Amino acid sequence: ERGKGDKIFINTTGFGEVHPRANIAVKNIREGDKILVNGPIAQHGMAIMSEREGLEFESAIVSDSTNLNDLVLKLLDEFGEKIHFLRDPTRGGLASVLSEIAVDAKVGIEIFEEQLPLEKQVAAACEMLGLDPLYVANEGLFAVFVDPEIEQEVLELMRHEASGQLATRVGEVTSTHRGKVVLHSEIGGKRIVTPLIGEQLPRIC
Image (cartoon, rainbow, N blue to C red; front, side, top):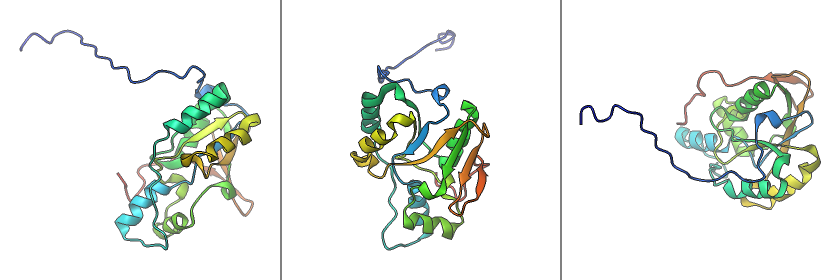
């Protein structure tokens, strides 16, 4: 009705509550923190693209899409504020997310190629399509920054859960090269990992 909506209307919906022990913030990331992921990278993006492109492998590439709330809740229940930061590397992949975090937290991040969890058929699909798995989207993956003293305990807990059986450490936080992510290659070289510029092609969504 004309003239009856000329005010400010505010609508709110409550859909959860803050965990009493959670203190997840980029400002909590500090030198020495270990960076863990709960499973292989690039699964979702390559599952979509291999199906679209008709690529066939001995075993099909399956999307990692899954519910992560149970695993995250157990991490917070057990370790509380020692879980410094959590982030899901969706569009733009792990590389883009870590690059953004390095800038926001004003820290350096080092990742190690030999430690990146990557299934054989996913690596093959990436090579065939000319894609870097670090930039491929994930759906059921998270990167968690933890106090170094609890690294092994966190990995043990994650590996006992269905969504974290292949959890591993991929990197660590350093005070050098602040604002940048550096990849240590398997052959001993180093390169700066930058955020994804533009769109990952082919698009998956």
